[in-house]
Image: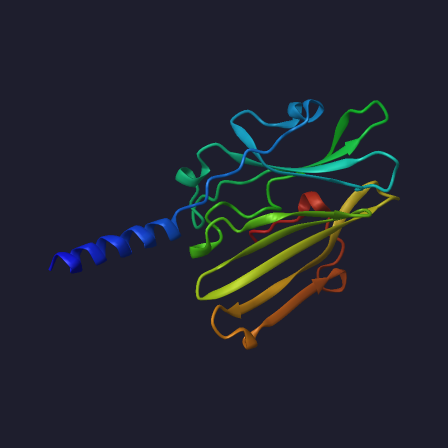
Length: 194
């Protein structure tokens, strides 16, 4: 009988550990970018690269509200995660070029897989916001924005991902939408929740 209770306690501990959110790793933020961190927020991700095809390094900063895992409700009140597009200047400072509360999923939007945010990728005027979540059925979603030099702004370029079962990977379904599907959507008007 004791062995049975020990087994139940062990299983409960394992399942609690699996369901718990991983602690966030502190992101090192250069002094010349700290001014962009909103009060009550921390930096979830900071990725550098060329966002506007000039000679200066740029960055995408994703913020999260302190304590979001306790206050976010994916259905009624997802805690929004601000995404800031920061453009490098000649004097080694940064300028806020674009901002959105609706480009990154909330902390509990990933289902049983936990926080769905996996990172930002930047390459030659494009940046992508990447997510992964689900439970038995898993999903990915990668949203890519492209820089338009004439407008000096970023527009939705692709929105796609895969759906697949965790056990039977042969059932992978890929769906990618492009400008032909959604038209010209400015970064600031894009809403991941719709």
